[in-house]
Length: 471
Figure 1 (cartoon, rainbow, N blue to C red):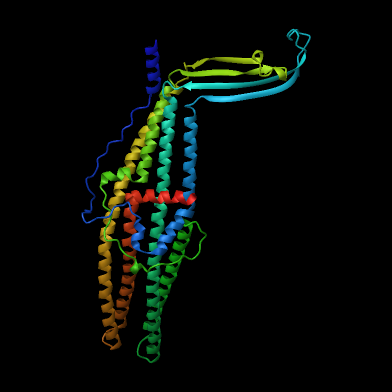
Figure 2: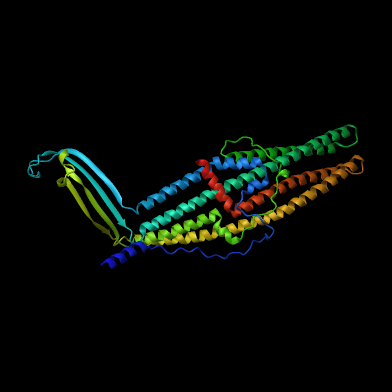
């Protein structure tokens, strides 16, 4: 008898109808398309501090404290914590109490009153109810497992929001400093073109040139003015974005180092493709959603089997206060209820098929997330490596065109070449300087993209900082 009871208890504890979870198999690349042998840093550092710009550091700290999207993600996680608590509560007996008191009168014409009981009497009762759903088939445990996985998924989603906010803010700040540099270039070009325009007017008045050169010089001034105005718009938009990311209303943004003064880290993070599965928040979130869906299959399967519920009541019921807690006034009952679905018109089967289909969907969503992660890392590595070379190419082009403009200016002033040659040299240098500033900004944003694509320990640390700020 004791052996049978032990076997039954072990059966109750061990039975779980959820399929065994296994991470979906995928073809994993051994290395990235761009070799990273020279890389020495990992993605577990506060990478933005490598830029050595205290203003950027302060903006990111402010965003971690005040960004509204992060706060939404934090309290969304709290909701899933509560949902897990609700699911786990069903693992324990449910106890409730019901107290009532009243005065009533029964009919004396139909003989329903008990002998010695007046037709008008008091009725007081206090009942405690205990119920316990025996989780033989693992329905509750599967529900708890699903809720726990959903919570872990939401935590990773919160970390994904932190990753997005930090990387977006850093990129936006770099773009702001890029536009600032381009605006300086545009103003310098505008001033030089205004001088050229004045000279063209004087030369025209002296009869040395035609009116065409005046109109050409004026058109170049207007082109520079258009570029200045467009850059002012770009600067204002980036400032507004930075303010939103830091949880503030739109206003001007403090500047730190010039773009050409910001330090470039000596190397890029070195991570293997296989490590990406355990450090990118979106991949981890997708896998936890898959685990939750796998557990829901166990919940659906358990609906095919009897649901056994142990119930019991104990309390007191009387018409007189002085008899309330006496033995004669006590009432109790206990028993077992068994519910077995017999015919549901295919509802249980359809519900099981639904959970299986949902899991299959999430399997492919997980695989798609992993593939997209590989793509983003490769894209960022390729873009960063080439952008560094582009910075040097644009820098050399600026030097060459600056020399070209210098020679064209001398020859034009000596009357050895026409005005169009001078204009061509000046236009090309202006465009080259703007392109150089853009390439320099891109070299930083592509590095930021690498850290954002890799995820890693820095996201966990930033997420921990967010939670510490709330304490």
